[in-house]
Image (tube, one colour):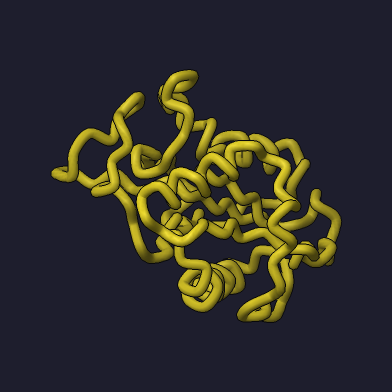
Length: 181
C-alpha cells in the first residue's frame, strides 16, 4: 500500500481498455435512461506499490463494498431484489474480531446465478483469519473497512479513498484485500 495519498485525478485508461463485455451494455443502459455515457473508472497505470515486507509478515486489511444491514429499509437478505435504500455513502470500519452482518442487496450482481447466501463470497474474513493462522499473511488488521459504491469518481477519489487510506494507516496495515460486490 502506498504511503502517500493517491493523485486526485490520475489519467483514466482509454475507453476501449475494458476486458469485461457488460461494460458497453451498462453504458447503453444509462444512455437510454437519459444519462451521459457512463465512464468506468479504470487507469492506464496501476496506482499500487510493491509490498514493503513479505506477505507472510504483512498486516492485511479487508476492504469490501458490502453494506451493514439496515433494519427498516426493505429486504436485504440472500436473493433479495436490488435495494437502493440499503446503500451506504460513507466509509465505515468494523472490528475483525467477529463476522459482521453485511449484505449486498444494494449492488447489481447476477441474481439469476447466485443468491448471496454465502457471506464468504463477498466478505472473506474467515479465510483471512485462516491465512493469518497458517502464516500466509502476517496478521489481519483490527478492522475491516467498507467503501461506498457511489458512482461519483470525484467523491470516490477526493473523499472516500483518502479516508480509507487514513484508516488503513491508523491500523498499521501494509497490504489490502479489496472485495468488490
